[in-house]
Image (cartoon, rainbow, N blue to C red; front, side):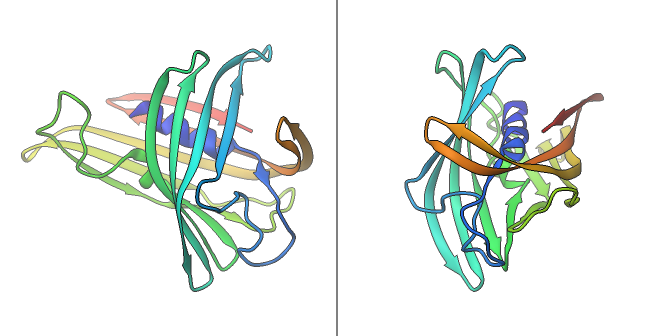
Length: 203
């Protein structure tokens, strides 16, 4: 579960690729086409690869003022070993790209191995990415919560929040797939489980 939250943090730190300049969802931060694959390479402070996150667009559905998409995300280490996998939903509505934090935590009612009799309950906010973000712009905060029950007894509760999101700059980033006009977004993530707290900043 913690790895799923790390996957969310990595996703939120992903530079936003601008495909066009418009006020609607035709200008998306992701190639919203069924079968499209996006890869985020993770490196340490010395530039050495330590892992990657691969996102696959499984299905795209049109809605009144945009679209909704099912995305499969898999995190692997530098040797290609699977760390975690989750499926979540992305959507764009009236020029605002949305990622629901609850859907990133895993399917409700699906406990981890060894806890098959447990019941999981999730809640979560939408994190917004407006289509035309500008340097200096602040973005909304979001929270997610997971509770684990055995019968009526609560076994564990976990909280995850993303705050202080800010558009830092626009820059060109060159990758093996080409050069892209990107937006850097910084944020602070707070993780609390069983009395333990951890805070990290991503850009």
